[in-house]
Image 1: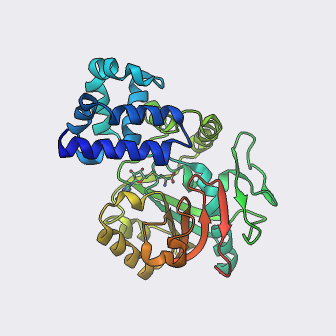
Image 2: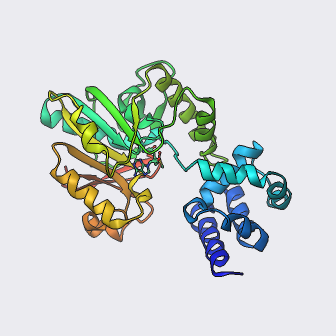
Length: 328
Ligand SMILES: C[S@@+](CC[C@H](N)C(=O)[O-])C[C@H]1O[C@@H](n2cnc3c(N)ncnc32)[C@H](O)[C@@H]1O
């Protein structure tokens, strides 16, 4: 085994044990099978490092075969369809759009609207298909408070909220919205929709159904998502926001893809200086400078920051919201 293939084997074993094991046994088995065979690892080694990602491989495998295969089928499938799978891995990225994350954002947005006594203009960087740009289009069930779905077929997202979480009784008024993404996905393109659906892990049928319901809602009024890089193109988009609304710029599960910590930190500095409120909902390691005592607690949770201040711990797929005492 070369240094490169052994590095990929480690990456796939780590993915199997730390990410897939508790959520998708079929993916755990496939990732372990990839890690255990030199010829399979050599298939991955022909791709650029950023494209060797386990989640991307597993989605591409499913996208091409149309199903979740068994580990013993891997060699035949890589031999018959390897070129197609590699082509998907070169052309697509993991753009998982999880609208249920809106359940963790809406209380913060409602609080901002209440504090500023006015409407909100919303920008999402790393918006994928833009499903999180519609927090006012979905229903919510936080356990001790609900906001019913505003339309008959809109999804209702369940999110376990801690007793301290300030839960809204109404949706904030959002008068303008726009997204920015390296590769905006088109809600009217069946290939893009197919890819979004494939990114939901096998066995997570309820999540898939919620995604499909959110896509139906969003298709009626697709949010505008422009192509661009958050490290370069945000200022221009911010200039388009109406002046008579409070501008909120947010991102969820995005800055982790900006590999260079210095680039992340420059983005953070720019956001802190910007004429906007900045909400960041990311893994704990993304902005260690703002994580403080949270850095070592609850490593499986995201940290929701408002202008760099910890506001809440959130379930990565929007499944929980623990307000941090005295915050916000
Ligand atoms: C995992 S998806 C998250 C999508 C959405 N925020 C959500 O929570 O459902 C990450 C998205 O960030 C985008 N992205 C990654 N790096 C970016 C960058 N430098 N500028 C703009 N978008 C970026 C990707 O294209 C992808 O659509």
